[in-house]
Length: 501
Image (cartoon, rainbow, N blue to C red; front, side):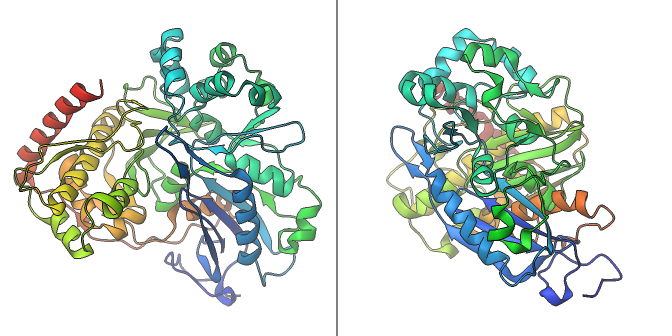
């Protein structure tokens, strides 16, 4: 195998040109499970990428879940296919990212008692309201970096106790989806610092489970896995690993991390000056900072990702989900019509949309919020509705970005990634107008899975820099439309306050 003389671009390479050590990464997203082998430069190796599609089970009562054992089978299948043809012992590390936050209850034998409850499951709305009367939410927010919300564990654990007491009493461990997969496939126990933080259970100042939350929920700390920092991989794995996957013999297994953390690393947004904007089924804007902010504004979270760093930002439940719903139900139109609707100039009489199909996270944290559309008339067209939804999504990003810059005014770049940037490229123009800041879409595939690989390689091959991500043209806001988007924010806020608050 040949070694490049300079840092190469982040493009796939054949196995014959790949540079060791190798890492196999696994990405469990909202719509699929993927696996790919990467070389020391975090370049994907050709013909070693595999994908299995899946979907959440969603119902009108707020259900958003997936069968945890189905995902285990998917991971075993894609992992087997991804490392096919790789010699025994060649893979140095296994890395994983998953959607966050997730919860699987398991019994003493490690068997799942529940499906995997996902971040989008809003059934604990009643328990959330009760917790808000029992806890000082501002105090919880400042200690854990998270608000009380249906997407986090506190409300979900109370909901389980109230609605499924038998399951709650039989639960030996509360695991994230990544932990469950690792436990079933490799006998591994350990939760990444970031995973525990993303669950809303980690005190960001002590880096331990929050004692007040444990006490109020009536849950002992030993029902959660030990917390593991990302640079401390696990090598004590079940003997079956080497037997089932000889290429993984002796590999270090890095604790599964949330996809948001992996996404920042994957696009190169690994300093306080660069914010990562993700636009996939869900979305977010995040920035990685040293330490953790002294105080947080009400609309943001701060997740500790290690002993020394945190990731600060806010998330949106419905980005690609809103677009896909439009295309499947209310306003099916051609890709060209969508692009024209999103890239055209701002215009009056576009419907005003609150795009909360599965509840709101940042900035208002209304877990039971639902979408609202106003301003429609007999002249409203399907493309007008598309434009209205896009503007609603963009203003939701803008509400997060405004608070993020208050916490970290040093942001100089916004890098965008995710499937929506490719399927609906015009959305980034609307977003740039709304946030009043240039947006640069990165030209690299599968950024979350790449980020998991980059993080593992920073420990396994610290002397080898990640491959360069090709630069793209900036999407720059049009200053002449600033007044329109300022007014749009005002109208959005007024509608939000009238129907959500």
